[in-house]
Length: 303
Image (cartoon, rainbow, N blue to C red):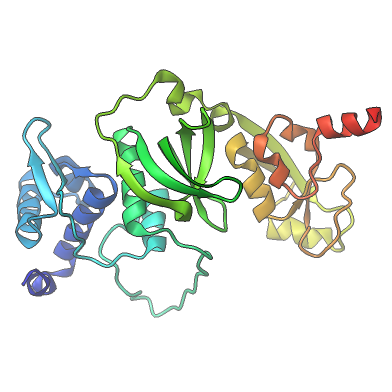
């Protein structure tokens, strides 16, 4: 019955219904002001839309009188079919949050998918924990340690180019780490549980530290002028400011040669990190192609 009523709604109103569902599912709550600000409507119209969504899916939405907020229902079941790619784009870039529709431009745009997409029910609980700033109990599968039970305090999503991670404080190891979303199972949002000061994102040194890198055309690649054009480097240098927690992923994704003497060979290495020492202290620098830590070099000299 709800599906039939949904089909009869106009496109604009369906978009608003989809937005309500996205906010509930992946943020855990929505206010009239959120809907009014997103679509430029009056709060009275937003109230009517929220009432309509409640009629369409009564188990999906509840009203919290204490906070004057609509929250996700205990028996939530989505009305719309969102792809993980679309949801992640919405979360990362803040647009395209209406109902999924086919392009009306007549122009084909084919975007390659990542190898592994996270389960949406898992992703929703992760993002609700981020939004509500509370711990998340998970079962996690690690290559090194196998399966383990953990409590994490997630605060950000990371796109490595191949897969999605969540940045979080891990109570098991007592440090900040990246967790692959597809390896998370049975997440439980520990709403109302306290987060200690040392578990908050502002205490994550790798997250708060910004590293400044300079990339240049690889000295051993032919036609450097093409590299300058492809990467928009009119001055011959591509300056980057990255979080230390993401630097290794970005350099690997772009196949940047991070060896001190630009020794990596292959057509994929079109860029070279001018000063590898700029990565000193970056924990995931080991992911950067050709990078060798100064500590390792000193150890080899002593031996």
